[in-house]
Image (tube, rainbow, N blue to C red; front, side, top):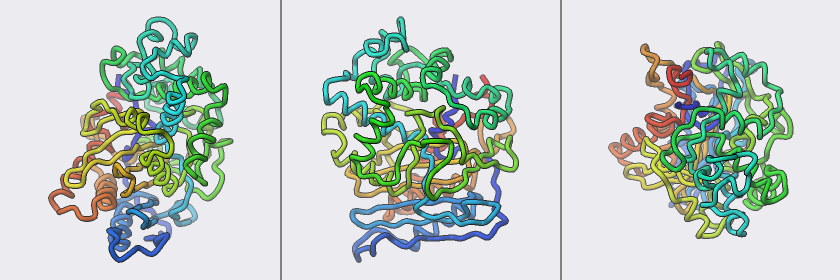
Amino acid sequence: MRIPRLFGTALATTLLLTVAAPVASAAARPAAAPAASSALDPATLGRTLDAVHDAGMYGIYSSVRDGSDRWAGASGVADVDTGRPVRPDLRHRVGSISKTFAAVAVLQQVERGRIRLDAPIGDYLPDLVPGERGREITVRMLLNHTSGIGDYVLSAFPSLRQRSTASLDEDRFRSIAPEELVRLGLAAPATGRPGETWSYSNTNYVIAGLLLARVTGQDPEAYITRHVIDRAGLRHTSYPRSAYLRGPHSRMYENFYGLIDPPRDYSVYDMSWAYTAGAIVSTTDDLNRFYRALLGGRLVGPDALRQMQTTVPAGGGMNYGLGIYSVDVPGCGRFWGHDGAVFGAGTVALSSPDGSRQVAAGWNLMKYERLDSAGTGFEPSPIDDALNRYVVTALCPSATPASARAATTSLRRILTGTGTDLSPAPWAAVLR
């Protein structure tokens, strides 16, 4: 069964709507004046970011880094009713990028000898994952999505099985315990034998959070805040304390492939359903800072980082490690990071191996894509094309036209989940 990765996809979208409200395009001022030798080109970055909005995205904001030089930009609106413009520093629900944070915390405990990556999860949580599964599924399998455990999302929002988004609204203020999420995931059809194949499942990272709670004796969100977020020096990153976002943020519009028309704002939402798999709020600048700290060895040591970067094939040109994946972009090299999505908000963050070249972007309209006539795939989306071009431009400023086309094709396969279950699947697969 292919489970929709509702908070682990970039570019999973449908209906293309342009905003009839006044639009502010803030091809942003660089945080610091670039040196003459900087590869950052503010004019080009601003133009390609504007193109994402022009293609139909309500609003997009981004931070790019090249060594010590930084650029931040935004284009479009944060509120379609008032026309309030987006800004580069908006806080944003980053979805499954939260998984990298959780994986770092687990690897910190591996370094302390409290967790063994290849130990059965049943050694730590025998009541949560009992029996044969508890004996065969290892911590590593949870973190690299080879556990075979199904996803809980469809069971947590059961109306989706009937092509209805009613439960998204009914459960807006629901608080759901992580143990219940795990129960739903374990009850879902298995995606394979433990260790056999890669299949994305948010259940894995809810279990990882409960594992942290067991070995540290602390609330996992509190532990990750102190030992990962604070240690990385992130000032605008946190787990939400309520259904309401604190600080400047955009509204977050969900179309759900045309089922919600016009798209509805889901920026107010109880994120207990995402827990350590997808609840973090951050900014694009903080995400770049986080991945730079991780890849620079400031959050875990070299052995632990090497474990995180030991990958399994995940389809579509992507290789998945422990909470982080690699993308080989033709003509540009390898980049590390993650993408994420929640109802109404998408995010991607990618960094060169040394963290010197980075892009992070967030946007506020999700699942705008249209299903094809057969209902088994998506029609090409100009938003996806424009977003992919922007990411390539930010990562590969010196790319030749041919390599840029190849890189855009590669990113499209990865960020739209073509051939993987990274994106919410077409209805025929979602409802199977």
